[in-house]
Length: 332
Image (cartoon, rainbow, N blue to C red):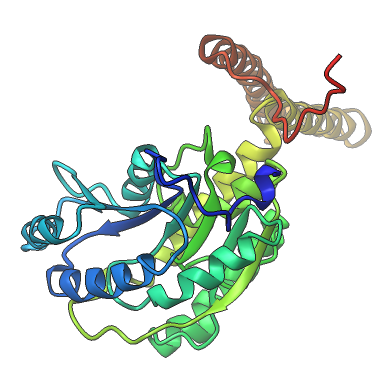
């Protein structure tokens, strides 16, 4: 059976590794832990294959870790990883991915706003040949200003810049095939860009409407300032996608443009001197010319340095500059 159609197959009863890893970043959600685990395990035990639940306690300052400890006694499939301090949701998601053992990963928030009942639908959609299924909170219960204006605007900007058309990048409820996440390293607020990384690696990405509930317990950790961080992180992601392997293109391009501006400024200064008799010291154009040439030369040198760093990175990490989906052979 193809690896792309193996999601729904039941595991061997002697399988030691879980087929599914449900990953949950947790930060100060003490009141939500017990009801979340009860609902989540009700759904998970109804699935046709083995699973694990991996919770990352992102340095919670309330009783979240104690609440997770109590749940382990009831649910042996639960594993808890505790950070020494709060590193943020992206770091928690990265740790979830690193510790997860399943072929399929499903992520959801710990605030009870994502509905675990949507997990079977995500897996069914994944089984249709997709590598990433992203949840879409069609009827989001978040604050109306953030939902209708800022969040939608940010989603449109990200979709346009990345070329991956999704309506809701902020929804944590997603399903992934673990192989599309190999080699992915996340920083800043980049956890929401996982579908973009996967798509750029050739993964098939789709979106599925999912339920969304209003927060009943606890306090939201999301503020409007995150939108700015997300847009800035999107610029970094786009830069890395287009120029990570050939940074000289961007640094060299800026450098050549700057040097060209320098020569244009110098030409203008000489024109004013010989045609209009204006001394070079009476115009800022010579200074501007020298500044542009120095800036351009520095930019090109930075590009060459970046090229050496990229080559050192690939060779030291033994990382190929390509990604293979399938290999076919006649067996001879």
